[in-house]
Length: 192
Image: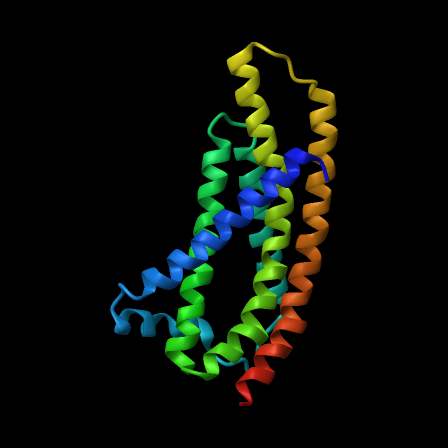
């Protein structure tokens, strides 16, 4: 991996972990009743759960995130806006961790390990892949504007297309895993 992409990966992980920590500690500022009202997200799966529509929804949601991040990568402020998206995803993960703990108490830690961590890893992979390229592209555009430098557009488009294809493939796989593996893990967790 190029040094630039290593730096982007470190940047992304710092934002994600920072968002998770802020979400966890920020949830303590929320009223307990407000957080408990959000527990509808943690509803147990039943046999009438439609896997196909969930798969389509998850895939479309991932594709929307991919395109938003890709488009932001073509702007001067793209790095800042992509950082905000990644941070808010981390914040959302932190709040979800606390919802597990508030809803299930000690059992919630098992729920985080069994269901949330695999889901987050699967869910964030396409976003991280496209963010690596988009942040680098936004930085190159900023550098070009500040230094009156030219970008080799053909190389950038080829590289961007590669990252877009990798992101779509990982979004397809992650959507499939979320409606199969993650649903099985949630059902297993709900048996306790």
